[in-house]
Length: 287
Image (cartoon, rainbow, N blue to C red):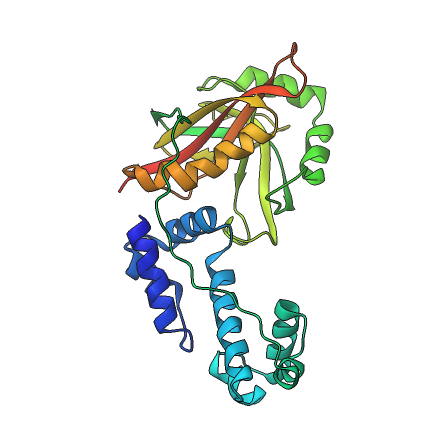
């Protein structure tokens, strides 16, 4: 996995002034576009497109300091207009390109390298579960994409669920993990950028086809799921588990993530403040 990502990085470096279509990058990695973008984000902390933009602007900054004209640099790195380049450069560096050139003030963003860092004493529990087809039945809403902190739109969704809907959910749940889950899918930016919206559902897993008129239904085909139980301070432990799935488990495993709804559930400990048991269910397939 890390070798594949480094191949992509080297390919980007060799083609910073050329178009970089997603299919070309996926071919270099030997991964699907979805898996490449997902793994790249969780290992680097930024989207693939953001990385490419940062590297291009970094090289543009270097070229400006070497005396190249703003117009030449803008079109060299694929911008369709001088105005568009100037806005992007100022957001990135804090200076207009012309000011950066005059003041000889540059900003750099170095090329990434993916390496293995071995950390001992911190095991990660995982089980692989083969699941038959099921339906997600619950209440959903389009919510803003947000990687950190409390998503108030999800809080509002949870508060909007009526007692009748809750009773219907509990009557329907008949598939492991037999819990009310939080499921996310259909992200505008493919879960790779913190922009746009995604669909978030609070619901249950069921084999029932008729879920009643109070709930929505999302069919999920039979698939393999990697299940990651975790226990500790909430929400830090859950968020850390989600990050480690991509940063540690996937690169070392024989699996890759597939484009199906992922979900999790959390059970707060009534005897410990802000302490919970959670499970993260990630849809995967063997490479």
